[in-house]
Length: 174
Image (cartoon, rainbow, N blue to C red; front, side, top):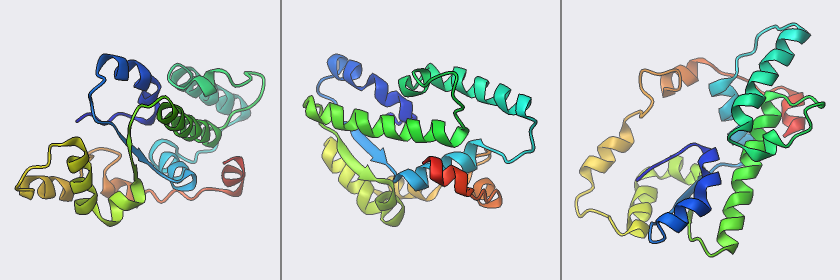
């Protein structure tokens, strides 16, 4: 099982051609929780001059534009905030899922909220769909209880300490 970042979905049709018999999962969040999570994990509220802000935006566009066509295609003359880039990433992933579905590429769609509220049940459904559910789930349940991002800036503990609140402009951009 491989879990990539959201932009890996851009490779979906290519991966399907190479591995047509794989089982695909599409884990998704609602736009607002996606934006909140992305801002909390990858954005710090700091005072920047206009020049510094534009330089940061340019770096983000260069990095993310190579991974997300919607960001690369966005008018370079118009400002594109971090929140807007994250919103474009979310929208692109959702559009690709629909596109692949219409192409006949099967994916089991799983709401992230379901994963959080019922991780065991969701894991069992995923493994059942993939045809690889073991008879004993103990090791899987133990893994689900661990923080896969432990000791990183994305750990549950680190993110709880960094309670980033979205401002009205960010919500409006979404």
